[in-house]
Amino acid sequence: MSSRNADLKTLQMYEFMLHDTALFLDTHPDNAKALEYYKKYKAIYDEARSEFTRKYGPLAHRDINIDKPDSMKWQWIEGPWPWEGM
Image (cartoon, rainbow, N blue to C red):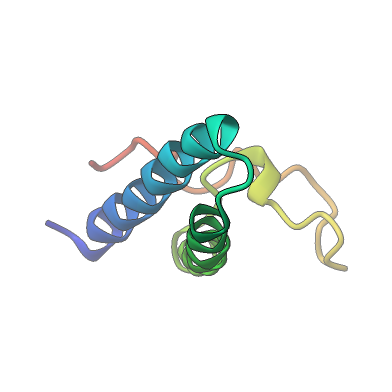
């Protein structure tokens, strides 16, 4: 397995954890432990996604930084698509 695929699997794992915890929090909104768990893994996920985007390119259009000075065109179509080469 390539390092890109391994990093993508890690992101998917964190995303699943966040989604599952969010569903729990929907029915247990006052659960402080679950909220702390969510906050912890949200920060880890955000960092991992940022690192993935830096190394391999965007996973979604919202990952493109259009505020950079060299962002004079729509970059989403550049590079491999997230599902290519898997």
